[in-house]
Image: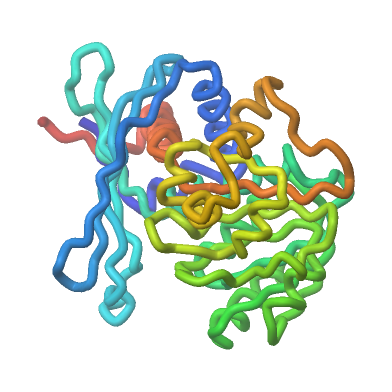
Length: 323
């Protein structure tokens, strides 16, 4: 069995690699060739942690496996990342475990990749200004992935932490872009051609009246029951796209508008995979507000882990253990 360390995963998989792999698996999902299995997500009852297991299979590859891990909010005080996860890949022919892949970096980069795919497919092609609500660690991956699909000129960001904004600002200006640290959320939203929300919020941070016509929104922070980043009224008036409808309505950004009766499942125009495959319309005009609800699915994790394992084999850099 191969063992891929965190550092090796970072060296092997680029943002551009992740975008290609995740786009391929979204398309496979739309064709019915790849399927995510039911998610297990539970409060641990220790260290305020939330733990989950996501599994799935892509028959077009083929890839079979699971990612296990979650959120340990006190890890920062220990010098560790709050998000911790690992991916285990199996041989679809025999069921034998074939690779164990550290998934902290890969989870971050695949999340950026899915948002960028939605931006490429749903935002106006002339989009230049990125707005980000939440300037934590994930913001860097969102920025770099968006730059892979759109020629940005400036970034407006809001975060309750001045330290986060300062750190993120250095990253933005280091990439040659203008950076504006906004004191209130409304200003960051109003400036944006593309808006990305990436927070653990449990209350709406973006109001309907703040969003300009023609804006694309990638809502990436909502992956658990109770989380929320967008005004349900905004969700109800936008063109809605998802990674997986069932997850979006139950644990994603759409859960609140759905539970409140503002939308039905029929309000979802399609999955991002269906847009990629040409099975549904994406953006229909320059005035439409589009929302992608990125809850995060197992297959995103599996394809980037498989890519890391494959590249490690090709380069001869993986650790092999008898298992």
